[in-house]
Structure formats: structure tokens, C-alpha cells
Length: 273
Image (cartoon, rainbow, N blue to C red; front, side, top):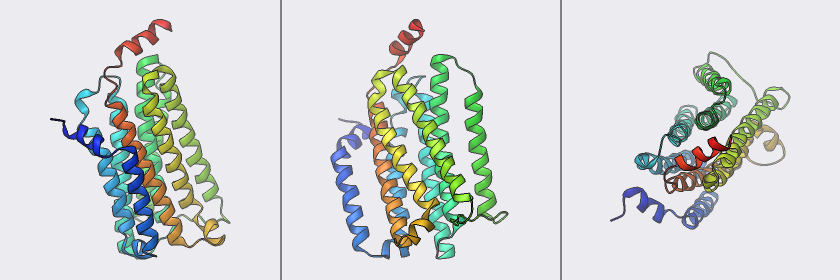
């Protein structure tokens, strides 16, 4: 009898996840603003996160010492993604509207998630190449910085505006792109070190690309709204991209489950170095 994670992987194939995403888009758009006004759009996001977490947590026993840092980073990223949409939902219920602080804090959570996964990837690279700890410390400093900013904004100790006339959205946009590029580069390094992880890397790079665009939609929502797109539609599209990203992440971690031990390939790299 197949284990629960194996059953999940058989059920939630790439085709089924694509069909689910398309169905959600159709239902959401057909509802008009209802998914937005009730906050259901955020609850759907949390369900996708739970699917990804289930794939990781039930497969822990198959991961070796080289994969564990990646798994911990991926688990942390998914949990933070879930928290971001829970906070967004609670904030929406409290305020019954969206404001700049809410948008920025969601992006802060996204950045923390990406940095957490990148820290896991950096630890993987360090374990293989015995490189410096400087990048690892830099990533953790970024995590702490954006967590601190989230606390300041959430509890009203500081305010922020992403009005297009201010520099803030452009600075945040540059930060989102830079951190995503850094994470992409880490994934590329892992792919070059351990070729059998190419399937995982390809899926996760696709997920990062969608999350990056999703975050940029939040950062530049006023510019997009001024161009004629309703705010609720911007939120919808951002969430659709997020659902797609989480679907890719589920498929990525399912790929990891079938790698077995990485010792032979990693040791072969060390002998070549």
C-alpha cells in the first residue's frame, strides 16, 4: 500500500494542479468581487500552502544530510507564505479594505520566505563547497530586517507609502527583483553541483518567477490601477500567480522525494574540486 505522500503525488499530478488552478481562476472571475469582498481569495492560498507542507513533512525520512537544509528552508518558506495570507486575511477582516501597509507587509513576508529558502540553499552549497559563511549571515540579516519592518508596520510604529510619486515602490521593487535573482542564482549553482536535482530546480525557479511577479503587482498596484485595472482584479491576479507558484513548489518537493541519497554525486564533485 502506498504511503500518504506517495498517494498525494499520484493524485496531485501536474495536469490536475493545472486544472485546479484554471478552475479557481474561472470561479473567482465569475464571482465578480465576491471572492475579494469575503476574503475567500486568501483562504484558498492557505489551502495551497497546506498541500505543499504535507508533501515535505511526510517525506522527511528520505532526505539525507545534504537535503535537510533545503527541506528546512522550504518548510520555513511555506509556513511563512501561509502566515502572510493569514495576516492578510485577518487585516482585511479588521480594516475591510486594503492599504499600503497591508500590501508592503505581504511583500515583506514573501521576501522573508524567499530568503529562508535561499539560506537553506546556501547551507547546501556551503556543505558541498566548504565556502565562506558570509552569504549565510547576509541572508539571515535580511530575514531579521524584513521581520522587524513587518512588526513596525503591522503595529503602527511606522508608516509607509507606495505612492508612485515616492521612491519607496521603486526601492522595494528593486529589492524584490534582486533577492529573487539571488535565489535563482543559488538554485543554478545547486543544479550545476548536483545534476540529478535539475527537475526540482526547474520547478522551483518557475515558482520563484511567479512569486516575484505577484509581489511586484502589490508593490506597483497604484500604477496598475491608474492604468485602468480595478484593485480587486490586481489582487486576484497576484493570488492566481501565487497559487501557480505553490503548485510548482509542491511538484518540486515531490521531485526531491525520488532522488535518494546525494552522497555519491556530492563526493564525486569534491574529488573533482
